[in-house]
Image (cartoon, helix red, strand yellow):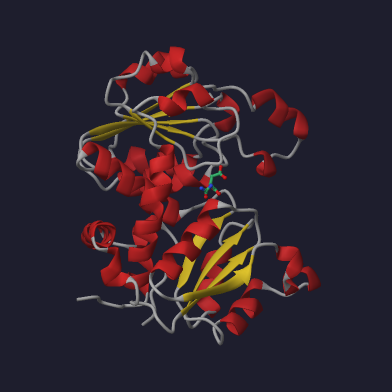
Length: 306
Ligand code: NCD
């Protein structure tokens, strides 16, 4: 049976623990893993813009001694001729051993996984999910805070269209004593399908509009960009795009161990002056992203390194 990574819940909590330990070992002994994927190929099928995710997954495969191929622009693939994802992935299954797909439509990776005979990694499907970003976020939080229990997590910005926040909330729900603070303009609130799960499971959360009002209670502040490409009209985007700007003044109200995460790309929502604060962890996330994606590729390909 092949395994896919379509949502963060595809790995059990115990499997995630093993994944974190593997990522730790990869970080400590990279040479041990340098040939683990020799002879294997990763295909990256990116129908939407990306810098980090695609290059991070490709770097992960290259670090494991494997090779990569793919496209970074749907216009240069047969999608431009009208080919379906189902057909494309059936073809790619003949070329590669594993594939990562990013697509503007929610559910595209799930369709790909149904037709593929190789493991599929969802590298972002529309405004829905982004599980490898979540693994990156969990790795970073675990490293900085020493664990994933007992945290008040603030998520700020575009909670409606931001797939990274949907995935992060669903993954964090499985840990003990977690509280969420959702900070967004009313138009960009967290979708009901996310808050319904929290309500059903009795996980505390609150929704606020002003960052200043709750920044002081947070252990993690996860900032996000307003997702321009998912807006229906330009006017709304322009009205909302600078709603939150985290600067030194606001950060001064945060706890001394409240770490700031962001999946990147950052536009205006974090002022560059914050980058030098020891709590700014968004470039560190990029580092851990490669380690955890290496661990993910090894796990999905069922490769064990001794
Ligand atoms: C995110 C994404 O693509 O959803 N970027 C990323 O993968 N690191 C966040 C974003 O684009 O805002």
